[in-house]
Amino acid sequence: MNLHKAELHPESLRHLERGHPWVIKDKYTERFKAKERFLLASGPKREDFILISDTAHHRVKARLWAKIPAGPLGSGHNYLETFTKELKERLAKAIKKRLPLYQSGERQNIFLTFGEADQLPGLKILLFGEGLVIQSYARFWKKFQKDLIPKLRELLEKLNIKVDWISWQERDLDKEAPLHPVWGKMPSEMTLKEYGVHYSLKFDQGYDLGLYTDMAAIRSGLDIDWENKKVLNLYSYTGAWSLFPLEKGAKEVVSVDLSSKYLDWLDENLALNPKLKKETHRRVDKDTLSALKELIKSGETFDVIFCDPPSFSSDGKKTSSSLKSYQELMPLFNKLLNPEGHALCFINTHSVTRKKFEEKMRETIKGTSLKIIKKLVLSEDCPRLANFPEGDYLKGLHLKKN
Ligand SMILES: C[S@@+](CC[C@H](N)C(=O)[O-])C[C@H]1O[C@@H](n2cnc3c(N)ncnc32)[C@H](O)[C@@H]1O
Image (cartoon, rainbow, N blue to C red; front, side, top):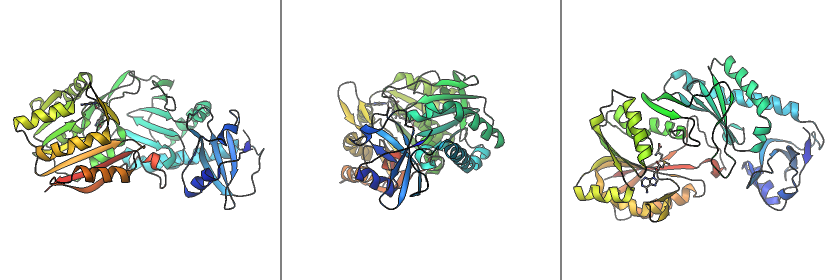
């Protein structure tokens, strides 16, 4: 596996220099050849970039692996040995960083690597109890699968992380790909614990595992006293943001989702936690807007509203983007919240910058008693990389009513 000289657009070189780790499709990337896995590009300031090529990806044609001083490695140099050594070091570094979280036993779902932010471009590894799900965002990793799995197992054994099965999920495709077992026997479902709450995860339903691990650190880091609070969880999915407040002492939670399948799953999760009383939870199988209007009509109010809409959502009639839907939602939250109430609002897309999200949200709360008090960001096992907005896809705001 040799290095192959590649010429890049001056703008791509500038991006790489500033720390953005992707080379996006342009007329220069059209010259990349599928069989050339490692590319070498000369930067503007006497440094060379070593890139992992990915001609199959529709947009990200190469990802930065290393920046080195210009000169010593030329085209034709066999890079495999160096790459393998660096890969082992980076995996070890990323996983060791998460060891305290693993050993704390606070949760059984942890991102052991988080792609670019761990210098493992396009490679996310999720621990679920005693299983691993490897999410590959670049075709390169699929080609390297046979080498990666034994290295990973050896490392986990050394770090005393017990793993019984490993599955693979391709995330670089346009369609949603299911999990493929690559080692051991993946169960079709399992129960795992996150911050004292049990959840049912299903591994045989494609993308839909049942729990968003990138939200876990945000859940535990929130500055909210849930004791005796009444909570409204919108777009609730399987209920992580319903069960967590209940576990923390909330007196009542209402979960709204358009999908009865997910609300059934939420009920299943609730049943896994006998400590949480069924009568403290109410499900509303409805579109969010209609549910909110009915709640306002009935005069019900809440202490906390959690809102995490899909990037594009439909009420069955019209489709709207999450950002746009907040224009309608925020004035309703203002009506539904008790004084001193909290609203936790998220968007989950890299196509809207944090700045734009905040600007738009400020517009939506003009004339209301709501105020932004904190930004909510990916953290802990889901680190962010400076100058890489695509990796900062989950954006949240904590608002408070005066
Ligand atoms: C991104 S998931 C929410 C994840 C959830 N907040 C969590 O962290 O577990 C989006 C959910 O919104 C639901 N949904 C989509 N459009 C909706 C609508 N108009 N009204 C209510 N729920 C909707 C989907 O069924 C899905 O369960």
